[in-house]
Length: 163
Image (cartoon, rainbow, N blue to C red):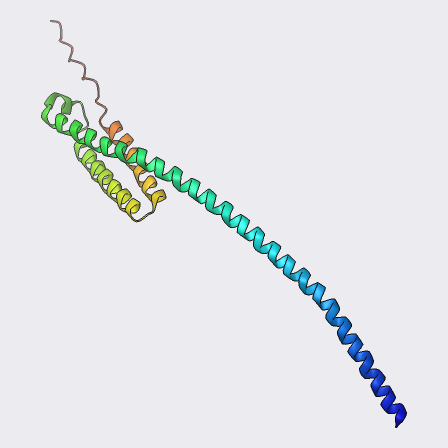
């Protein structure tokens, strides 16, 4: 029985020594894992800060673009409305335009006003990128209207027949 007890005591001693050694091995591994975790957190925070800086730059650029486009869009609409008003009063100029051009121009002007209103609403809601996109669309519509309003040259006078 003494041998069995001694063997058991020796086994327990070895087990205890093994456990204490395992704890000593685990501690550095745990510390290494914590260091790796901290390094990952630091990297993530750096990337987050860089991303925030890039987002702020993009927002600033969009805001600047919006501040340029908004008055341009307003002026474009006003200018085209003024031009249409003058055309309506000038029967000779109307003759040099295709027959349905005023109706097309009015549709484009309505679309321009609507896009500008959408742009302003988007800006108020904080969506500057969408506001810029809509204001750019107003400028594209302006180009389409300008093309429509190009007057044709006067038709040639009929040649008189010699008798």
